[in-house]
Length: 351
Image (cartoon, rainbow, N blue to C red; front, top):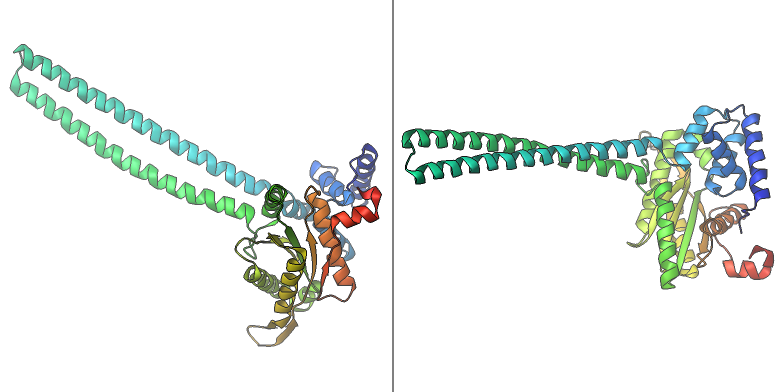
C-alpha cells in the first residue's frame, strides 16, 4: 500500500527540493509538483520518463518541465480553450435571448396599435383612410423588423453550431492523443476510475494490459523520430484492432500503451495480450521511400486483474511490475501479475 504518513510526505518534500536544486530549477509549484510525484513513486510513467531523460543526459530545464507537466498533469492550454469556447457560447445565448425579447416587445407594440385602431373604429370616430395607412405602416415595419430578426437569429444559430463544433474539438483534444488517436493519459485516468467503480458494484472482473515497445529508443536513434512516430501509430492501430467494443485502449505516455478489459478474467486477458504480442511481431516494417527493412516491432506486456477496493495506483503498479519482469526475461513476452489478495497473504504488512 502507498504510504500517506506525515513522515513520508516530509521526506518527499525534501527529495523534491533536492532535485530542483540539483538541476538548477526554480522552486515553482509546477516543478515542485513534478518532483514530489517523481519521488513519491505514484506516477510510474512520469518516473520512467524522467529516468530516461536523466540516463540520456538530456538537459533537465524549464522547457522539459513544461513538457512533462503538459504530458502528465492537466494542460492549462486545453483548459483555457474549453473556458474560452464556453464563454463564447454564453455570449451567443445572451444575444439570442436579447433578440427574442426584442421580438416580444415588437409584437406587443403591434398588438397595442391594433387595439387602439379597434377602439377608434368602435367609437365611430375613426378616420378610416388615415387609420388604414397607419396600420399598413405598422404592419410593414413589423414585417421588416421580423425579417431582420430572422436573419440575426439565423446568424446566431450558425454561430452556435460553429461554437458547438469548436467546443467538441476542444474536448476531444483534451482527451485524445494527437499522434495515435487513442485516449490520452487524462482520459485513461478518468476511464479507469469509472470502470473500477462499475466492477466493484457488479462483481465482474476487470483486467489491465500495460504494453511497452521493446528497444524503442534504438528505433528513434537509428531511424529518426518520424519513423518512431510511425511505429507508435502502428502499435496503436494493432491495439485498437485487438480491442473489443467495450475495451478501452489508451496511450499511457512515451512508448507505453494500456488496454482496459471489462468483464475479462486474468487468463483471458493474458491470452489477449499474447495475441497482441504475436500480431505486432508479425508486422514487417520498411521505409516508404526506399523500401529498406526497418525490422520487427515487438512489445513486452504486463497483465493484472483488479482487486475490488484496491488502490488504482497499486493495480497499475502490479501490471507495471509484470511488464518489467517481461523485459527482464528477454522481452517480447507477456507476464501476469500475482493477484492482489495473494500478495497480501504472503506479505501481511502490505495490507
